[in-house]
Image 1 (cartoon, rainbow, N blue to C red):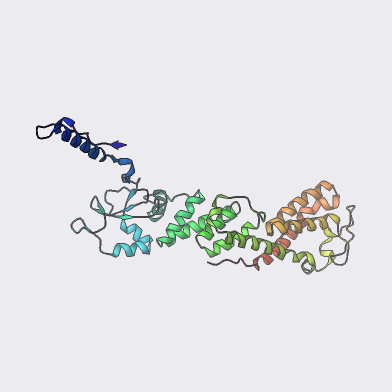
Image 2: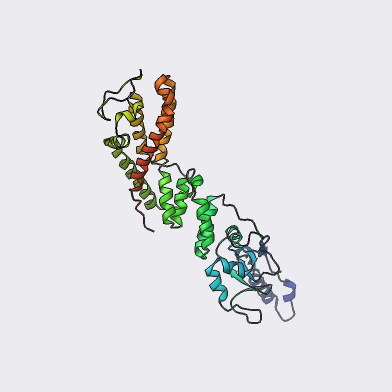
Length: 355
């Protein structure tokens, strides 16, 4: 929008004191000067008007205002914030300005205004964690992009209980199993050592080269390379189980304790004798070979359990009366043994990152 000052009336300069030539020159110069005073309002910064946040952060008896980066005013109680945060407790212990003793602090409705760098959505979620449950419901954390903002704000303002609550809600098996890489990115961004390692272990359930995910921009190339290196080292570590089946022999002690591996049924036998010096069933050898191949890509106990489920279905389709009858009963305990050995080896691999 452009506002222009009114143009002068040329007739106002036509007086008897001016000759015709002077009047013309004076009128011309004055018009140019006044025309150049046009002010372009669009070039000036426009500050949005402050608005109040929703309930319960618009209470008339609040004693301080927190203003978000997008100009939303939260009328809050110092007591609630002080009890939740040592940062705010220290801040509010400082001498507070009043309308009679004005300082650089802005006042509004008789309350000091404290500018906060977080946006209103983040601040709203953060404050709801600080308020009693009788005044507001515990906020939900459904979007990863919002979680990291709230988590970083909780760390910034020393809201320890809020940070702990967010960590417990985010880094739990139900979430990690579905979104290990996204959790890794958030944990790494927030410099949470235990959660970073935990997320990295859950990421072993995914392929070595992950699909794109939204939070990948939160981590550096160094972080991503460290995760890939960790993944590769874990894959190599579990392959040592393939070099010798002594761990199986130590568990079963004798061939008689695992007859399902050496059955005399009609199922094809292997030509190799790697276990107790006897030939074992071909389907079991194929199961072991396929599982170790998959463990290179996904080195975790979950890979073993998934492979066992597939083998149980395959053996049942063979319709061998001996193998099919008890395949689930005997293979599931073996899966527990195999998966534990895998997890033990993975736990010895370090994730090289600085914190």
